[in-house]
Image (cartoon, rainbow, N blue to C red; front, side, top):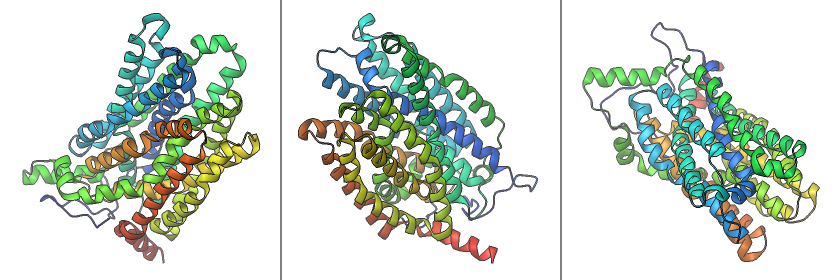
Amino acid sequence: MSAPRSTDTTTAPSATTPATTATGERPSWKKVLWSAMLGNAVEWYDNALYGILAVTIAATFFPQEDAVAAMIATYLGLILSYAVRPIGGALIGRFGDTKGRRWVLTFTILLMSIGTLGIGLIPGYAAIGIGAPLLLAACRLIQGFGASAEYTTAANFLLEHAPKGRRNYLSGWSVGSTSIGPLLAATAAFVLIKVMPEDDFASWGWRLLFLAAAPLSLVTIYIRRRTEESPEFLAVLREAEREQVKQRPFTDAVRGYWRDMLKAIGLGAGQRIGSFMIQSYFVAALIQNGFAAGDALLAAILTYIVGAPAAIWGGYMADRFGGRKLLIIGYSIFAVITVPTFIGIGSHSLVFAFVAVVVFTVMNNIVGGPLTTAYVMSFPSNVRNAAAGFNYNIGTTVIGGTAPLIAAWLFGLTGSEVSFGVYMAVACVVSILVAVFAFPRSIDEELHEARSLRV
């Protein structure tokens, strides 16, 4: 990715300039970090819960004459929530560059919470027929629209407050927090499955898991409303008002940075697929291959436990040795282990399957920190939110969101999980090539500058 090219007349602070408030004091990035982490937890709790309960959701909201068709329809609901994300990212993301990062972060949490609570409340197919899948689709659309600008805006908000030379490390914390929501979802589902009669859980117990998102959302909204707006955004806004420049963040991003956005999509291809496998497919795949539902959920819990420290460590290493180097090495290892991972899932060996999905998760999250930094910091602050939101959501929808459906289709076609392992290995190779030839070198240049200041 090339260095940022300004497309307007504003003179925003550079990405390497330490952010300060109007009083000259540096705002607390720790509060911003908590805000980002809690929002990520809510978003990925919603997503993971849908994947973890895919079998139950299929049985509740779709006719059961064809169980495979019901599962595919359930995964289409997953894709639907991601299909709307590029639109939401473009519409909501631009407000992050005009109304503020904090405003967007409050709005997205509200939308995601409405969608999640809706799934917990709508009747099933046996009660209202075709209305059930239609209402489910509507809730998934609301979730997807809300989540469209959540992750990149939260990362942007955090990185614009971050101390110099620690951006990958804090990105690692942001990525790691995406494991908190799924960990809560998987743990809660595991407990309910163990303590409730099977019929009660299938009938109404699973709904409690969706309704439980409400208190976490309220805490997140409270914290976000008490954070300070990004100083970089405020500087751009003041300059635009002073120069009477009309802000067109999305239009300027597409016109001036479309090549950079395409490169960002390619850079994240392998990790986007991996994230969806962890959070939306592994549980169903383990169950389909003969493992008990409790064992499959336990495997999911293990992946979420190791996911956070792996992401934080990856961000730390990226700040020490450079994001480009870590991405190349990480993706290379990832490409090698994908096929063995899916062999493990189909092996009928609980130990082999557990080891496979845990190692897979570690490698997926190690590359997450520098990838997030590249997603966001490849663009100048006047278009950063719109550009990052759009490229992240395009990659997430087209590459990541379709992964569970492709995996289910390939499994039905070949009878083996290995075929999808090959598909994903190819995606990792694409990401390696982008990291080698098109990584945004300006990001690692900032790292070198930070090192020289510490000498």
